[in-house]
Image 1 (spheres, rainbow, N blue to C red):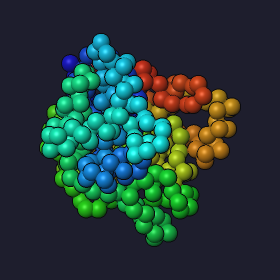
Image 2: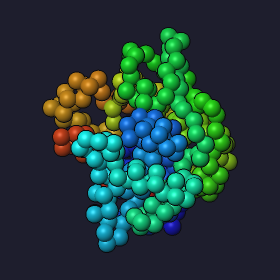
Image 3: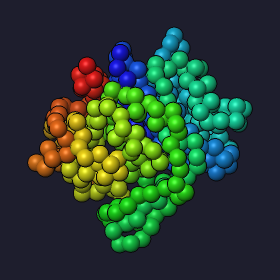
Image 4: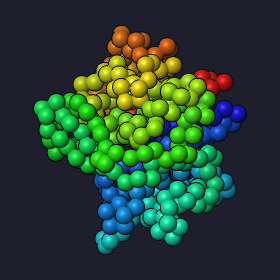
Length: 316
């Protein structure tokens, strides 16, 4: 049994974990705790807790047991009617209640993990409260994750720097998991709001350097307006290496299959475009793995099973 650590947040990390949970490895998810939008942002502001949304997704991804389907639906259930609960997911509310009950986010996560009978471990990257900020190429600064994620500014402007205010220390258990891992996976996920924020917690880059794990980067399928508009594969990898202090990845995994034109048009309308795997990508990894990585229905998304199979082959 190998120790695999997945660092990120959002639907990208959910996808990776959903596939890996079927393999006989010890899986640990290390999750960003700096969101400020949606249900997480409201609960954070009103209850003073760390944002629970990405933690909830990871817990659900690793859930199992006889009541798996019901509990997964329950944790993801989002209230749609009027009133104070509108827009909140049940899982976010439960994690907030558990935090207030036990007085600690890490204990609350462990309790929720027990309820969901998860196959693995979910750890916050930090237990300290902070907000994400970015400096854009025109010198302007955008504060709070929600304003970066859903830009009110010109989304074509490049992000020059991303940082936390205030700076925070990483959760010791998260650092220990990284140092003891056999494989560490970064991505996929929104580069500046889901993946890199984990690398900003003090101690994480040092743990990555200290550990002997194989470092794996899973590239996104699409660029994102307001974060990575116009980026190619090398630019993604270069930014992850910059903030992780790593010189090179052991493996970079990227998609090679052509995507259906009918769906690409829908994404283009949202200013999302397939990431070009350029010739310079080999500079940033010992091995570049190009596979058919997506599945298509109404949306295009990473194939959980395909990614898990690649990570398993790297681990073993």
